[in-house]
Amino acid sequence: MKFIKGLMYLILAVISISCVGEVKEKLKQAKSTVANTSSIVKEAKKVEGRIEKLKEAVPLTNEQLKSWLPTKLGNMHRTGFKIGQAGMYQVNSVEGTFKEENGDTFVKIQVIDGAGPTGSMMAAGYGMLGNLEMEEENEEKHKKTVEVEGTKAQQTYYKKTNRTHLMFAHSERFLVTFTGNEMNPAEAWEAVEDLELNDLVKMTK
Image 1 (cartoon, one colour):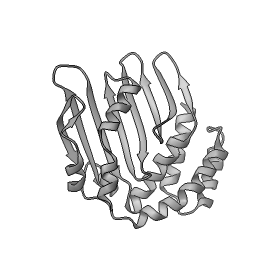
Image 2 (spheres, rainbow, N blue to C red):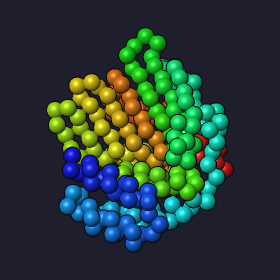
Image 3 (cartoon, helix red, strand yellow):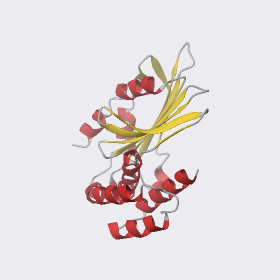
Image 4 (cartoon, rainbow, N blue to C red):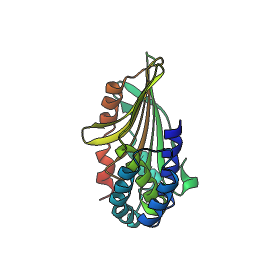
């Protein structure tokens, strides 16, 4: 719990930064709870340039995000969607739910466009989260940083319920949260591949 609290503190710090110097100051305050502070400082330096680039980018509209959301994911059909749910944070987003017709597999995804002043800070937070090398396991879950097909993510597998939760930034811009019920990690990543996230990148050009 101490590690997670420290990590969340750091992500909040990134969201509020205007320069790397501020990141270093906040990292000093979090030293007691996060062991790999130096690696986070290095990551903060890397993302500063990406933040500036995304600040100037034009976000996709909610309608564009909706047009991208598939109606089918593997053998699951879309059962619902929402757009603009993250509007309170001044970012555009889409959320979709998918379910097997004759099964218990159920997926919920949320995609946030990390373009714009607020979105760029969120993208930085997600990027740092994926680049933190961590792993923990107990009888309930297995949580670790993974890299799949070039995508770095935080992956949590809940053993007893066979549920996988993924958090990652696609193309350093689109913030993806994926929850797959009755899915192991390999099955979850197969579903992520079916999302065709690169089509979102094409829409920005």
